[in-house]
Amino acid sequence: MKKINIILLLLLLPFILFAKEVKPVKNVIVMIPDGTSIGVYSASRWFKYYSNMGDRLNIDPYLSGTVTTFSSHAPIGDSAPTGSAYATGIPQQTGNVSIYPEVSNQDIFPVDGSRTWQPAATILEGIKIQKQKAVGMVVTCEFPHATPADFSSHHYNRSNYKALASQIAYQNLDVMFGGGNSILTDDIRQYFNQNGTTLFSNDREGLLNFEGDGKVWALFGEKSMSYEIDRDPTKYPSLAEMTEKALQILSKKENGFFLMVEGSHVDWAAHANDAATMIHEFLAFDEAVGRVMDFAEKDGNTAVIILSDHGNSGFSIGSYNCSGSSELSLEQLFGTVSKFKKSTSELESILSNAKPEEIKSLFKKYTDVDISDEELQWLLSSKNYKERDYTQVGTSNNLAHYIAKILNSRTCFGFTTGSHTGEEVLLASYHPEGDILKGNVTNREVNEYLQKVAGLEMSLLDMTDNIFAKHQQVFEGMTFSIDKKQPDFPVLHVKKGKNRLEIKAFSSIAKLNGKEFELGSVVVYIDKNDTFYLPVQLRDKL
Ligand SMILES: [Zn+2]
Image (tube, rainbow, N blue to C red; front, side, top):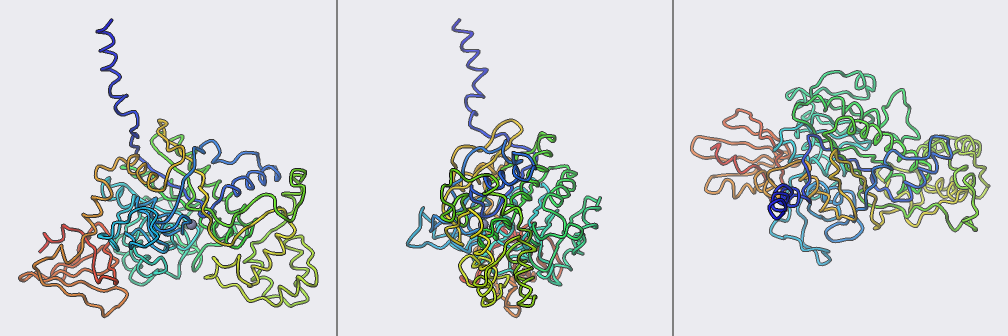
């Protein structure tokens, strides 16, 4: 009897020892509905039911917990540091893109000041470099916007699009679909020719008919893509269409892949307190979830996590406008919003190009709302919306703001702010063998899980020290100087004996004695400490 027990124990030992381990899989997919509070899931589900589109969301069967998401110095996150924490495991400050933050007097957790400004290796970089897998991103914002930048570039300032866009291009992504044609530079286009990237600009058919397996970028619009509610489906693909195409291309890769999909605009619509647009954006994201889950369930070697990066707007079903909330019917709650056919920003551009006498009828046409003379005066006296103001729509006096104010006065939806909020966000997780992420987890734990499920042999921290070492240390004892003739893209020159090394900031290409070679990772220059961060192995080149 005793002997049998020992044998049983020996047989079970591996399972007992590794019970908490996560089995690595071939493909890893992260999906982020940006700035999506829990009320948006509820409203979208009810909206779907009201519209006879079914009563479940595609994400529903996979919901597994919540995520506490924060910046290094503030409980309410900004997309740059919160996405960066998922990508790197390092909480950071507002504006930071996958970089070690400064120490501040309000840090929530200890910050390592010896690493301030050092780029932090991301899960995308880890999977690409360590596992030699394909990598891709699909978004609806412009490609260097916070979330895609978080996974594929590094800087302390999320607005530095020159530095971020260049790094994203030089990451050698296998797939990049989203907005931002105007952000491509001649240098980036030239690099695409060099590394064999096919570029589709405003070419939905070209992208959807693409059957190759090379690197592909497809960009739509000058900057961001349009909101789903305003989208012309003959010209622009949906998030689900782009996601499906990305899966088709990436799944041909022998080693597997990493894919990040962002429903970028739930956040923007929440900033604008635009309920209809938020719901349509989330449903478009959920359609992409459906395509991803169909793929993952069939594939059997793909793990998926789906999570927002922070809450936004304090959105609620029920508001001070509507008393007796528990007596309100489905029609009262969702009938009005179902008649809103344009986003507030699209309505703004329609109304600002119209004559004053046309405004009432145009408003009625697109929303079924009759506006009063007083409301008409609000619209006529407000300023025009500018795209860069999207985070201020909820709190400014522009036209889109007044449109939202009028629409919200006709619904029973509530908003408490036009900014981000600090409640936890929903988590969904799928793993072919059930090793899912569940319960309430922090943003850092999300990254730990990603490293495990991707099967990284080297931690992202160790990798960070390998690919982002300070140039002063790497080239210690050699002669070096920084050429700042092009202030946005400084060049590091290193001399040793007869050898000359040239390294351009925010690229992955260096020159040894005039001959170009690929570094395999991006080089980051930080002006605050006048330092290039680059691979340690570069020392051996000289
Ligand atoms: Zn965000």
